[in-house]
Image (cartoon, rainbow, N blue to C red):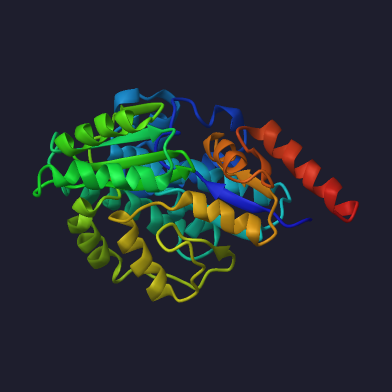
Amino acid sequence: MSQFAFVFPGQGSQAIGMLNGFAGNSIVANTVAEAGDALGFDLGKLIAEGPKEEQDLTTNTQPIMLTAAVAVYRAWIAAGGGVPSVVAGHSVGEYSALVAAGVIAFQDAVPLVRFRAKVMQDAVPVGQGGMAVILGLAADDVRAVCLAAAAADPASVVEAVNFNEPTQIVIAGHTAAVERACELAKARGAKRAMKLAVSAPFHSSLLKPASDRLRAYMQDLNFQAPQIALINNVDVAILNDPAAIKEALVRQAAGPVRWVETMQKLAADGITQVIECAPSKVLIGMAKRIDARLTGEALVDQAALERVLATLEQASSQGQ
């Protein structure tokens, strides 16, 4: 098979019935059951039936996204799919990538991401922090807007935290500072500056307490050197030392998701085929808008998985 990358989505891609397209796939069903056992409740029922309000709780969303991604990855391998040349994950999706790369066992990753979600939520009281997406401004302009908004109140924090596309950037911080930054962004020419329905300022420096608790939790977890190259969020780097990987995850909780640079690195390293491993098309759309050399599909259901597998096998047989 030709070289390709797998990417794993984060929060926001969850949906009731998101794995229905894999109904009858025993690998997927067993993975969901394994996650439920690790958590001590019926995660499969929550994925299949909701309610949406429960799915959207951060402490549920993060293990749901991990489980869905790993289930689809396992289904891909079981169907004869090749191992990707490189993997990457957006925010909590990085944990899915770590499981795929053999760094951490799935049964350890499931409670780990639930703990991560809890400490990220606990770091800032509900109502005191928030996030917003800024569309139509370049990264430097968004950074300037955040600096200006924070300067209006020296005790406040607002920062650019998710660099999703060249002109789609998420900011996070204290609620009032985020609102000021939105107004300043509109005045600077942003197409949209819209608050997000989230309960904490994820990936901002306000989540440093979460990083500290995450470090303590991971101290005794068994991490292995990756079997697949993995580009991390916080440094856009490929690390091999398990201790360094843990420390990067610690910093990721309170540091930006540098997704634009991650996709640019894939393209620069000669990867052109990107496959989104979960019932989601969010990252594929981003990849194509970040670098025109990147193409790909999403494994949204069993039919898509089989179609992508056949396409890659055909390309490989033709020597592409």
